[in-house]
Image 1 (cartoon, rainbow, N blue to C red):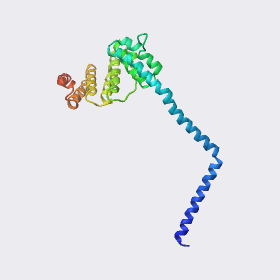
Image 2 (tube, rainbow, N blue to C red):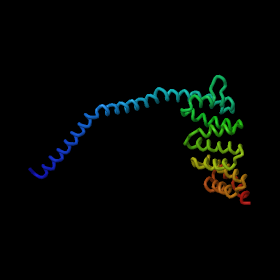
Image 3 (cartoon, one colour):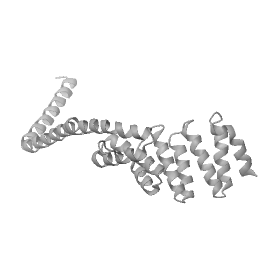
Image 4 (cartoon, one colour):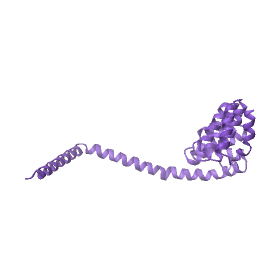
Length: 225
C-alpha cells in the first residue's frame, strides 16, 4: 500500500468518525433540534403573516385616510386637517389609530406643522420630535420646523442649533441654504455675530446660486459692521 493510499484511508476514517459523532448527537438531541426548528418556522411564518394580513391592510387603510387630511392641509384648512371634519379623520386621530404605519408617522410631521401654524408651539415640538424620516427634503424640514417652534417659545439658542442641524441633515441646494440663513439671523439676534457670519459666508461659498445667496452680501456686511 502506498503512502498516498494510507493518507486517503486516514482521511476517510476521520470523515466517518465525524459523521458518526454527528449522527449520535442528532439521535441524542433530536427532540430539541426539531423543537428549535419548529420555533424558527413559526417565527418566520408569523412575521410574514403579520405583514401580509395585518400590517399590510393597515398601511393601505391609513394611506387612504391621509388623502382628505392632506387635501385640507393643502387648502390651508389647518383645523380640519388636524382634527378632521366629522366625517373624515384628521392627522391626530390617524396618529392615534395608525401610529405604527408609514402614513401614521407622516401624520406626525403634518400635525407638527399644523400646530406650528396655529400657534401651539409646544404641541408642534412634541409631534415633530416623534416624527422620524431620512429623506432628502422632509427630514430637514421637520428639524427646521422644530427650530421655528422653539424660536417662538423664546428659546433662540436652541432654535439656532436646530437650524444648523436641519441644514446639515441632508445637504442639498434647497433646504441647506434656507436653514443656514435662518440660523444666521437667529445668531445675529443673539448678538453672536461671529456665528452669524459663519452661516452667511457658508451660503455665499457653498450655495452661490441659491435664493438666499442673492442678497447675502448685505447680511455679511451687516454682521461685519
